[in-house]
Each structure stands twice: as structure tokens, then as C-alpha cells.
Image 1 (cartoon, one colour):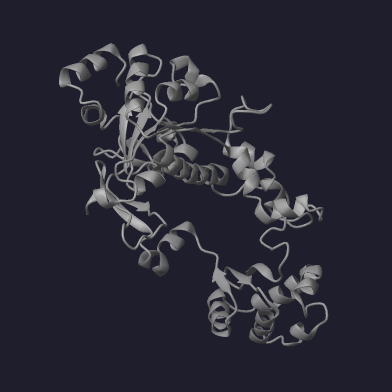
Image 2: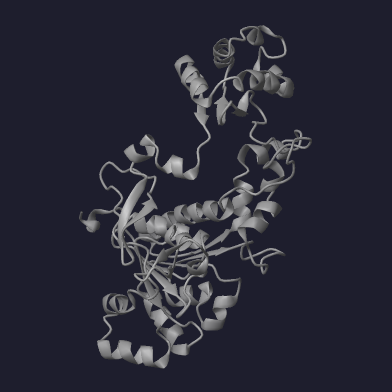
Length: 411
């Protein structure tokens, strides 16, 4: 495939970010065709390279320095190792920034100023450059200098107060979401913001500074629950796998496993009652309308549960699907990725990695009709492309590269 035909072909991104939110955003742009250069610390690289097990294995069977965590957010990028504490390393990054369209960073507020690489410093010298800063709490406000972690933000941002079993149920208490959603949502917001800033730059010639905070993204993603709180209704609480405004809309246990029933209207509830051989439920005043079902959620859930536990999950899923009642099994991650729908949608892809010629990864969810995603590069090994990048971006001679390496600026 011709990478020149990809939507972001020709866009250059210098990625100084680590861990997840920043790399997640730049992987999205790399999948769309941008040339993303990942700047890493010599010897160590991105923190997530060490976040394992599991790790890919070296030829001798020993764990490599390539963790599954790192692999999930860094494909279609090239890696260069630069020591930002070294004056020549700082100069090298500035030279790369001068040739970039976007620079992404997630240093603590003010840290890059020590290296002469603060957003304001870069934009003063390179007015067309877009700088995207991702932090826990943003560049302003009383918490700006605090370090930001997804788990902390899920707690501070209200998400854990609405996640987990309801009070009075077994295992009640606040829970974090199983994946780092504050990081992931912030990464997606960063992708949108950078594309919008590119559009603005193309019209005006002016870059700008994008200030993204995990906490801001967390608050925004509260969606209807945030609106409920602000509009003066009852404060949202934990509902476990139930829905605060719809019933029955939760998980249940069949004889051999769990399934989800997601009834969205009264007609679907009538069909559910018939499928369960309990037609009287649809006529009961407590359950005739959604509002009534929500008010009597606990009794209804118990009535449904008593029937479902009498047969297998496969039996009920078959019958519910025939009746047109929205339902699904609760699958493991392995089963979800192996489903026929995931296969049909190309959601598991293979890349040729130096340690694994058929490295499997979760694919990009965007499906273009004219410019399909290309999986060009496996997640890079630390510093794998240093010489290649310097020759391409800076037209650097081998002798100059050797000198940078001798000085310690280049890893």
C-alpha cells in the first residue's frame, strides 16, 4: 500500500510523551499516516517498556525489554534516544522540533523550561509549531503542579463513586474501571485537538499550545451523570452492572455463566416476560412502564434471576435473540478478541516485530472507504531508528551522528 495516500501523510510529529495518554494519541495519528518520532531516554526509554510481565521473549527465551503494555500504544512510530539533560541533546530536539508540525509532551508543568523546550519557548522560535501538553491537572489552577495518574484521577473525577456494586450488595464499594479510561479519553481528546489545530494552522499559518488535563477529560466523560448532578437531581450512585435510568438493564447469572439483558422499552420488556414464560410480569403495575421498573428494580431483578438460573447461558441467549431482546454473554478478553465479529472487522492485526514476526495487536477501530489504516511499523525497539531519523529529518552526516553519540547526547 502507498502510505502517501493516508489522511495524515506528510505530517510530522515529535513525541516526547510517555506511558499512555500521549502515546495513545500519537499512535492514532500514526495510524492515520503521520510520521511520528518517539523521543526516549537512552538506556531506559518509555516507562511502560518495563511494565510487565508479560514481555516479548528474546531468541534465548529470556524476557526482552518489550512489554505488552508498551506494545499497545506505540505502533507505526520510530524511536530515537536523546538525553534531554545534555545541552547537545536539547539542541538536537530543538532542531527536530523546527521541522515538526506537532510536538507532544507530558512533562510536569514547567519541567521542559529547564531544557529550553517549554511550549512558549518553542512557539516563540517556531510560530507554526503546534505543541500539545498533557498533564494530570492542566497548566493552570491550584493543582497544576501535582503529578497525574489515571487511578488518582478516576477517584478525584467522580468516576469511582459511580463504579462498583451498590451499597448493601456483596462487594460494595468504589471501583476503578478495568482499563485506564482517563488516560485513554485524554489521548483521544488530544488526537481531536491536534487535528483541529492542524486545520487552523493550515488556514492561518499559526500554531498554538493545546493544554489537556486528565481530570478535565474525566469530568467531561461523566456525560449524563455529570448533567444529572448539575441539574439538581439525585446525586449519581454506584449501581453495579445496572443502569440508573433503565430497567431491566444489567447482568444476570444463568446456570453456567453470566449474561447481559438490556431492555430499552416497554415492548422489549413484554417480549422478555414472554421468553421467560412469565407473561404476568408485563402486566404487573410495578413493571408496566420503565419508570415503574426503575422504582422497583430490586424486586424485578430477583424475579428475573430466579428464572434465568434454571437453565444455561446458551439456552437463554438463543431464546432472547429469537425474541429480539437485546442480550449478550459476558466474555473474557481472549474470547472477545477471538469472536467472529472481531475477526470480520479486522480488529486483530499482525505486525513484523524484530522479536516476533507475527506480533498480534488490537487493530484501529476506524474504517475508511478510501484510505484504510495501514499497519506499517511494529512498536519500535529502544532507539531503533535514531540514525535513520537524523538522516531523514536533519540530513545529518554519519560523522555528525557519531559525534553526537560520543558526546552522550544521542543514545
